[in-house]
Amino acid sequence: MLGGQAPSSESKGPWSPPEEPIVLHVHDLPQLYQKPTAATLLEALGLLSFEPPTFTLQNHVVCRRVDEQGVPTYLTSIVSSNLHWIEDDDTREGIWNAASARLSERSGRNAMPAMTRTFIVNGELSINLHEPSLTEDNLGLKTWTSSLLLAQRLAKCRGYIPGACSRVLELGAGTGLVGIAAACVWNTQVLLTDLPEILPNLEQNLAHNRELVARNRGQVQARALDWADETDVPGHEEEKYMVILAADPIYSSEHPKLLVSTVRRWISWDAGARFIVELPIRDRYDGEREDLRYNLHQSGFEIVVEGTDSGYDDWHGRDGYPADVTCWWSIWKPSGRC
Image (cartoon, rainbow, N blue to C red; front, side, top):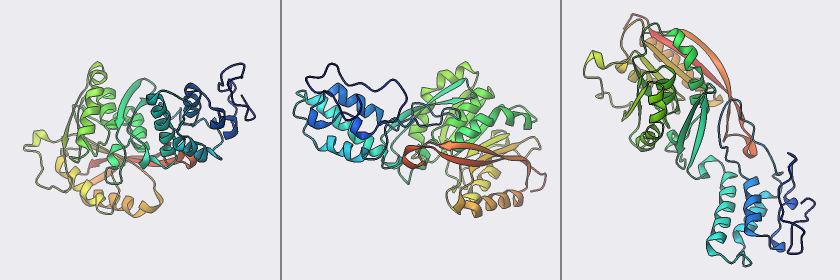
């Protein structure tokens, strides 16, 4: 009901969101002084959710159902209220938790609770990934835009791989989107690797999607791999990989050299081998991108093809709106010189 006329006990019917996709004002929501029912409050809090049920390149727009002006104050008033007219303790707790979650969503991705999201790849692969609460020390616990873009590009990348994709290695796998997609799209075996602290969530995501991978005649495994550990090398030449993948692998000035050194240790030094990488073009990381190119050339790789992709970062936009992101992708091969 619009115009601040939220229901009271004498109302003709319960408050409900309008059927038309109009943008409400916070005053159009149920107000506490009118003692709305628990169901009414929970329905209103649902309208204020930023959490996307899916994250695809086509379904990126956040539908703003309520104008943001005044929303934080509204949510704070619910959290601080004793909701005395709602008799059930568990129901009150659920309302407070929902209002707190809506406040957290407005505090940035770092404040978000754990969640499971669905990622659609090439319009047919539905990959479910769990993302724990994000911290600055564990950026691999979030699925980044470049991972979705690279997962979408894998089918086209196959045309630049002359041999069979029988064994694939992913470096910095994070939540596992690229590696799972590669196993399905290329019908192959993929070893997904990341730091030890990222591994438990990665293994959980592999378990959740193992049936999907099996249906697409793929296999996935995970293990820890620290790029700084130069003693962690394949035991035999046969254990090296013809294809290595990496999405958004650079967050510091040390990463380009560490990444290339790791690729150098684990890739088969064969003309048909390929290193495929995609990363966002961040303003403050121009030097790191150039260092990646330089280190690859210096380590005996030459570029096969490169380009840019456009996507959206679901949690970096202002007030919950997705932000445009441009990513650079490239495919490299050993040049024959060491």
